[in-house]
Image 1 (spheres, rainbow, N blue to C red):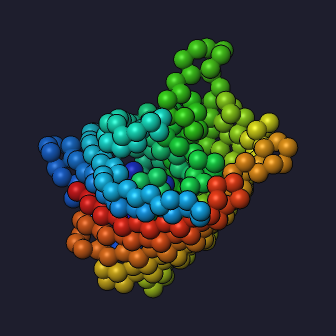
Image 2: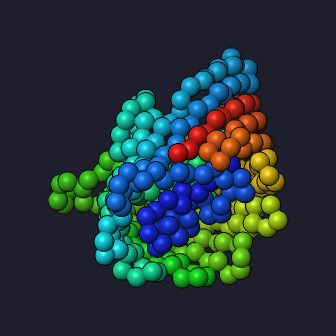
Image 3: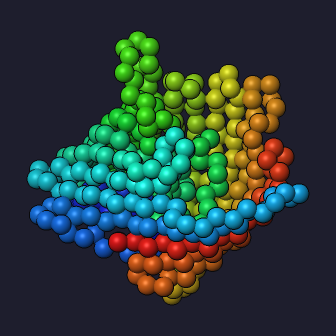
Length: 330
């Protein structure tokens, strides 16, 4: 559980950011200070620390404690509806080879009207119920199936139009899943990725979104759809994913989540299930899990999150895990 990254510089990008992220403001948010550095320039970010214990059936328990991620976001509001954002992160890099410092996002946005904006650079996909950052999650861990069904950080151009009850968005990128893809060789590496989405907000508290992602380089087509409803301290959510990986196979997955928060306390219950098959119908990855995650807001900028998770998988084995997270925002 956390809070949405509603820190864009002008009214258009603030509202669009809230819709792009997990989809509903957490009932126990942690505040961002958005520290002013100068005229139009501000900074914000977070420090994520945790202890975790992983116990596979029939195997040895492993434990981990330390800094998971540190992020600093630099925001600039210029004139004429132009703004920019650069996110610097210390944590596991895009290649997954260990902790490093790198540019996670860097993009410039032009707001043409209060409803319509265009951005260019490296930015995160619109898709997926569960946010990429810990500040956008309702619990400590993600499902783990995002790599199969969500877009990732992308290089390209994106347009967003948002009305009071309907929003549409679309992106043309070098790759839907590889932030290091630059399509540098004409006619060889110039396959593109595409993403389109629609969001419906018919009544207060209810949001539904659907996304279509197509990536020419990996011959992948994905449909991601989710719905959430927030009322009286409760947030309920459901998500469904289906993917066609061309000659590599296909997959599907879903999650169901309920969160309740009152005062500084919150608790989340989540169930998810997914299966990935190759072109012969053989399961190459699968998993389901029940996750229970209580939380306590120590202060406006400090959230403590606990978690117990029980996983079942034919390909990876069964396991139990525990975690305690301290998330500080500034």
